[in-house]
Image (cartoon, rainbow, N blue to C red):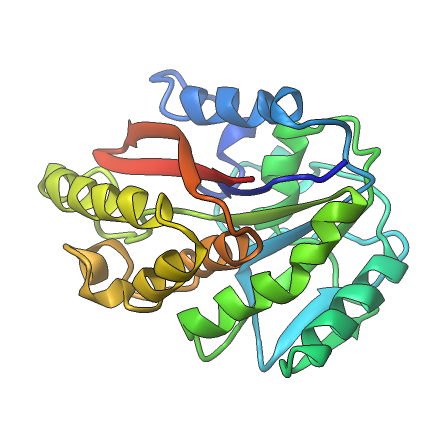
Length: 261
């Protein structure tokens, strides 16, 4: 059965596994926990694009049992002992790389790299059994939105084979803005534009997303695009209109998640 493609926010570092007395991350965690029930059936595998891995060309993890990369800093000691022992999917990684290359995009399989926190942290919340094979994909270092939309288009056939395509990033990602009420209105303006753009049919959506820098408060919301590009891949992997399936004010900024069928 065909799987959707979904863009999920991955929070801040290992936020879901720390004390949270003000319940900053509770709503986002609830959205992630509800993800499995929203799917048509259990995926046979997942391909997840992380905003925390940038490469020349696209790269995919090819390890049969990927390690974890604790790429966050100055957090409590126990967060560096988190485990997510999902198997890899070397055959899926090779297939995805071939699809990308056939579309004229540079791609390779990295047999050594592990899963960074943009992957294992949200998956540990959403799918704690860690029993679905996982392949992580990088974003391209040139940060070209059209390239990432094209990558999603090339990978879209995987959905028909039961592969869940996930983009893992943040719809707002300006470290200076989190916790600052001056960023509430700009983040909401960008989110409104993004939600409307994603609801357009595939070709119109692609055109709008390729020019995302022209959106209201675009560069205030994303000084760099690396946390937005996983959304571009997820959007490119579907022709139907996208819908916002999660939205919340987090640390004075608007954060959203999106689904494409």
